[in-house]
Image 1: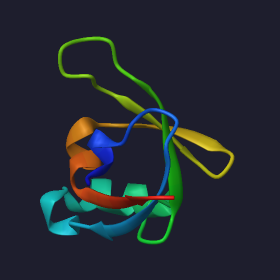
Image 2: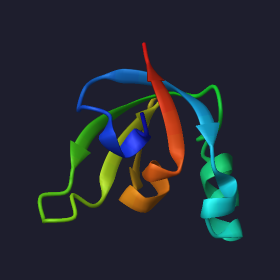
Image 3: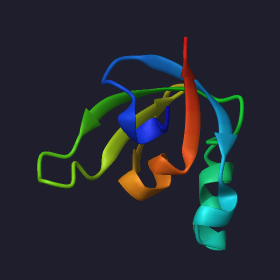
Image 4: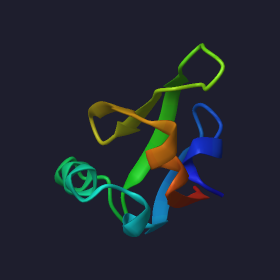
Amino acid sequence: MTLDLLPIGQRARIVAVDWAALVEEEAHRLQALGIDVGARVSVSHRGVFAGKDPIALIIGRMTVALRRGHARAMTVEAL
């Protein structure tokens, strides 16, 4: 399942990232925040408009706003 489909509150681990689907600078920024293969994450909120953008992602003790398109490039497994 991709990260954009992860239910709110469900914990997961990122198992693959399609870095080629992201702009290089954005990919580097996400990696600098610790969003990479092996990271444990959960979704705390989704946007309220039609696109459900952005997604509030909890990683460690940090909450990061992530575009749905970026989340779609990440494959996760539920924990």
